[in-house]
Image 1 (cartoon, rainbow, N blue to C red):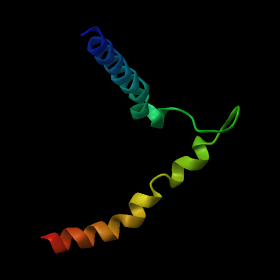
Image 2 (tube, rainbow, N blue to C red):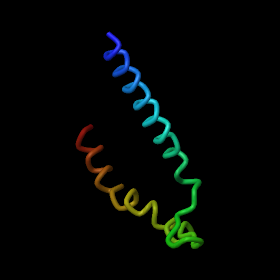
Image 3 (tube, rainbow, N blue to C red):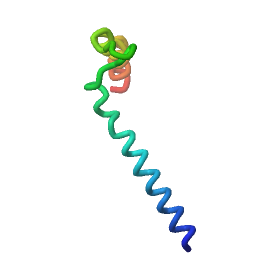
Length: 68
């Protein structure tokens, strides 16, 4: 009985820890992109971040048209 409670406690702590570590991912756009220590690459990467969305927009439009 004690072993199963220990396992449940360890599993719960692990799950809470993993959720805690992944909680900062949603704010990734606000954090700088470090190319080298002290060099922020966000100004260089920012303009091209929408490139995949813009490149796939015609494909999405065709699929939406075909789906009805």
